[in-house]
Structures are given as C-alpha cells and as structure tokens.
Image (tube, rainbow, N blue to C red; front, side):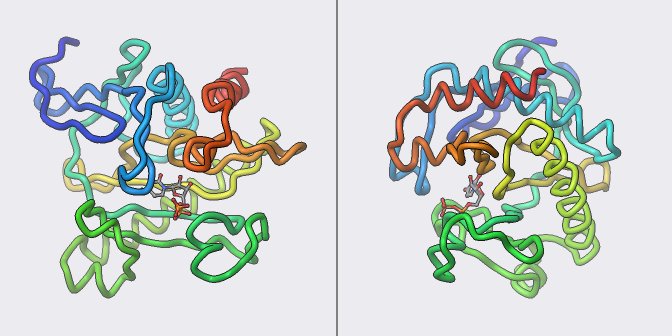
Amino acid sequence: MEKREQIYEGKAKILYTTDNPDLLIQYFKDDATAFNAAKKGSIHDKGIINNKISTKIFEYLIAHGIPTHFEKSLSDREMLVKRVQIVPLEVIIRNVAAGSLSRILGIEEGTSLACPVLEFCYKEDKLNDPMINETHIRALKLATDEDVEQIKKYTLKINELMLKFFSSLNIKLIDFKLEFGKYKGKVILADEISPDTCRLWDAKTGDKLDKDRFRRDLGNIEEAYQEVLSRVSR
Ligand code: UDP
C-alpha cells in the first residue's frame, strides 16, 4: 500500500491517503509533547515502539470483539487504518488516581478508585481540551446520544480487557485516553493506545513506564517504552 497525500499532521502522528479511499496510513513520529505542546521534545525510536505496542493492543481488542480502525501493520512506523470521522472527544478512563484527577480533587496519586471513572474532554487544542459532560456533548452536538452510549460501553469493556492484559504482564493500568471515530455509520476505536496515552506502572516496583517520565523529566524514557514493548511482545 503506497502513501499518496499527507492529510493531517498531529503532535505524534501523520496521516496519509492511499489508493483506497476508505483506508489511511498512520505514521508514528518520535516527537513528544506534553501540556498541550507547551513542552516539546523527541524520544528516540518512540514512533517505532508505539506503532508496535498499539498494533499488539489493537489486535488483542479486535480478538475480543472491539471494532477498531486497525487493519494491518505495514512497517516499523506505519499501520494501515480505516478512514474515520473522528468524534471530537478524548475519552479518559481511570482505575487509580493520578495526574489531573489527583490535582483537581486532591486525591493522592496511587489511590485506588472504588469504580472506574470515565471523563470526556472536548478535543480542541485552542481551548486546552477542557473537561465536559454529556449535556455539553449534546448541547454542542459533538456526538449523538446513541454514539455517546456506544462510546461509554466500549470504553468500559476496553478497560476491563486492558486491565486483564496488562495485569498478566505485571503492569498496573492506572488510566488511559481513547479516541473514537465513525466509519460507515458505526462507532469504532481509533487513534493509538501506547505509553503516550496510558499510565502504566510496574506492578512490583511501581516504576512509571509511560509518558509521565517525559512530562516529569524522570529520565530513561526510551527504556521504559521499550520495557512495555518487550512485555506486550512476549
Ligand atoms: N491523556 C492523553 N492525551 C491527553 C490527555 C491525557 O493521552 O491529551 C492520557 C494521559 O496519558 C493519562 C490519562 O489520559 O494516561 C489521564 O490524563 P490526565 O488528565 O491525568 O492528564 P495530565 O493532566 O496528568 O496530563
């Protein structure tokens, strides 16, 4: 499958058209940003590592009945994906308090939550992706009620599957972010799932194996991402 035209460049990925109007090539870059691109950098080979981790996770989710945009892996940095209309929401699900939840609600990082917490953010960089609720989504017509229901169901199911998956690799899944798209009228999972979009803590040591190493200048970023890849590959 050949790349035709670049149609989008984001912070971590580039999308290209292909000969098939229903399919795009998703290319993973090494660029890293945090705090809505206020902090910028690059993580050596991150694109390769995240492409491979995302591929493994998408394959696992597909095998367990979750529809995703993933079609197949093409190269070290490229996967073939379905061309979707992105729903302009970042869907965050949390099992353990960390990051903005800890900050906003004053809950110490690492505190288990009695049930998964689901949050929506409006995907709009110039507003800093503000947190919104379902009535905002309805009022702003960001998604239909049916699509929101489907997104919530998939997100909870994906969380259950991912908790099992990572726990078998001795990794604690703290929280993660999902994006969904519409394809031929249906909601499907899109974007990526990687240490850029999840908080992953080593189950034994508590070591952070995710983008917090970059956000918080903890060092050994590539090593941490590589560690996740080697565990998901075994
Ligand atoms: N997250 C993401 N992209 C974003 C915002 C959050 O992938 O634009 C992920 C983040 O990596 C974490 C989870 O969503 O796994 C929850 O992030 P949080 O709101 O705590 O973000 P923080 O304020 O700490 O950046």
